[in-house]
Length: 262
Image 1 (cartoon, one colour):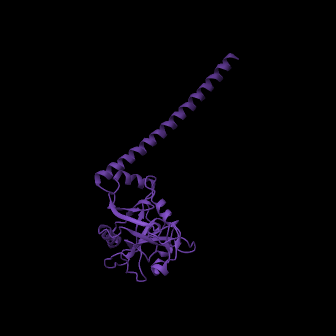
Image 2 (image 1 turned 60 degrees about the horizontal axis):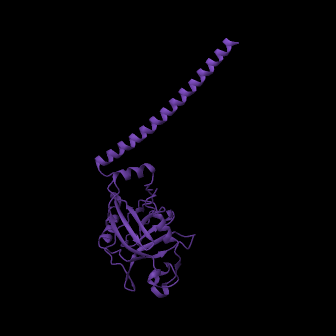
Image 3 (image 1 turned 45 degrees about the vertical axis):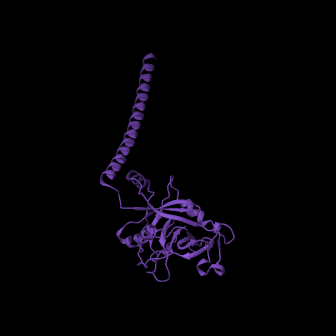
């Protein structure tokens, strides 16, 4: 009995030691994988810093009476004239004291946008924004939620200063309107909270008082007062996030551009 007991005890001890060794090896593999991942991220960040920005990107900041948010403009050759046109208005200060003059979010069956860039508050008057020459249509990106696109008339090549934000996916507009940027929406910079706040403002038909362009005017109160308007205080160019931040955003899949499918 004593010998059998000792043999059994030895076998149990061996099995226990083997289990401990397996656990140790699994833990070591996990730690090694984590360290390898961290090392790869650090290497990617170093390469990004050493080689310069991942892409030539322009960021602009919208300061509004409902909050501040940033927009990344799509600096690619196919959108060059559209982005340059928008920056011309920004640099000229022509978006200062402009308004969101149109919101379609009251109609769930239609497109869901908030539109601005067309009218400026001067004293107590709403006047059209001074415009440069119209630009040709460049439409390669999809009208998905959070993107900004150029507004225009029925003429595809008539866009000037006006723009709109897509509150939801409005893919029915694809191919007909130039999407040229997207709202930065991260934990540190949740820009879509401001867009959604704009979209939540009720719209009123003020065309009898102000004209046909104001049939869907968002007002924070049901009165034609300056304090009820959704104001764009300014739009300014801001520095691009650092390469480290851009690598992190790319790794998290936070910066996604959806190209329109033919």
